[in-house]
Image 1 (cartoon, rainbow, N blue to C red):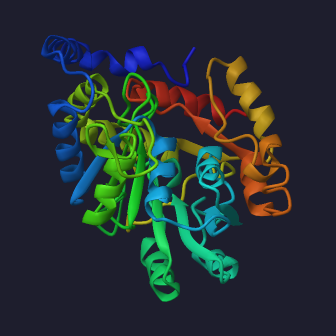
Image 2: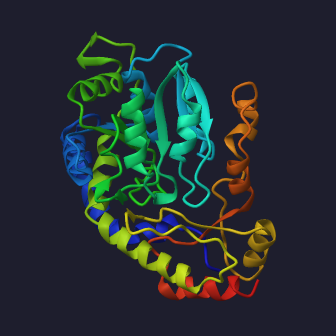
Length: 361
């Protein structure tokens, strides 16, 4: 059986360094907001080519804190892709703001700049875009729209560590960018972890204060903040893995090339363009008979996943929030998309086997 993911196997090359990192943190006696977190923030901001980085407890908190730092008024509107993972929408709702769905480009699955323009109203304050599956959005057009309409831009980079568009990496475009280091990500921790990058000093000061109870000086609270701090242990583990992130990306890109070249043409494969360096957190295909294909692959020894089976506007939690915003393009993507195995531990032989089985469907 070819598993979709096995985090034990994917992390095995790093086990010895993880143990050393764990021991160093354990012996240090400092477990929250210490030098290890500072070192990771420094190295990750350098990796993303941004001026600042602030570690958080997870990716959702990174999104919420980013919105809070921008000081919008309750009910202000934030444009968000209609086919994102629910976390992006939850951040907007939990911040007391109104999510406005904009449809994606059916080729890239990222938010369509033309659809953004259609959704702008006098109450629009920001665009919260998502670099889905490891492909950066069309940032030149989006940043132009944002500048024209004086909108803030928040990047959801949860799936795009190291991805770039025209040479600029995810996390370096907008006012703020939120990263998740959930264990399945290309740069995954061994638990929940997140970060916010920015080039704006005032916004960096704000998010750094908000993540720590709204406090910069112990027991002095300036803002109504959160308890959302990247801990020393996860930072230490992320420092180990960050050194290997480019190698992880290169491996996954090689596996993706095998899929793209080997799969039959009736499978709708990821859109390829030289302006985009995709990191393939997920290698998704689309097929009209997705559910039958998924079952066929499983019966023939290949596990897959679906990212994601239900569009945000169809989620029970979004009744009264998004259910009045029809999203036919997003719903078509959610109905037909299928994620194929593409982990760091998968071999070229594994992928060739998946291709062989899929092509017999």
